[in-house]
Image (cartoon, rainbow, N blue to C red):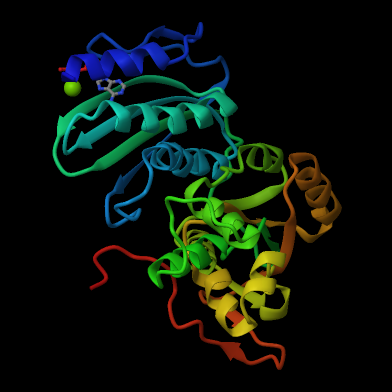
Length: 325
Ligand code: ADP
Ligand code: MG
């Protein structure tokens, strides 16, 4: 299969929509943004062996490459609109490409995201997606808007993706096969098929004072909100949400570091004024995600987790960082 045939195969699968004046096939795409909206742009790369196990199925990789980008749009409170796809491939393999596009477009279709271009090169397996969204001018959820005294919230069940990764690294979970154990199958899905919280993010516009998605780990990503807002955070260890699956499968000592510092969950961590608690709970209920209040923003610069005795707890690792030796 030639590069041209590969691009043609992708083009045939890409959706058409009126706001895509010119899509795949020209030197560049022409997009028609909506009146009164700001463009929200984000890009993320997945490299084989770094961001996903080498044996990851192409369909899971296609899904995740888009999901991690849509999660960034969710964290901004944006609506997802368009994306581009740059792929570096060791070989052109039709079956691999069909699997990849199946996963990629399954998620794109759910969120009505149109693929409008990309690039295809020969090299080690690496996938870069750029996603474009829109948000009403001036209403994006930023990291720098938290105030001292704001509640800190997190959606869903952080730690499950890290648990799946740990099981895989121990040789107890095959990322390429459905597991017979329903709990392990749930964890496998959480690692391979993250659900970007786009609806939740949009419903937090006007409620959240700051927001970030949890890609590097809850404490690390909350740390980014703290740094950008010039504040610190106090978290209650006992308030951190431990999902039923984590609780049933592992003891607390094992699960806690994953919940606090595990990456790859793509939940939303956000802050909101305490008088908005009921509104936050209602908004997340409409979005269909659980949400947990885990602490509050304080003066100072640290993220501190207090154990049940009120002593600061050390998680040992603060989240994933590239180039950290
Ligand atoms: P150029 O040489 O002008 O960069 P390319 O041959 O790289 O053109 O791409 C031709 C067209 O196909 C462009 O519209 C480009 O956006 C699109 N394209 C290339 N690779 C991909 C891909 N992996 N996914 C989607 N569109 C792609
Ligand atoms: Mg090109």
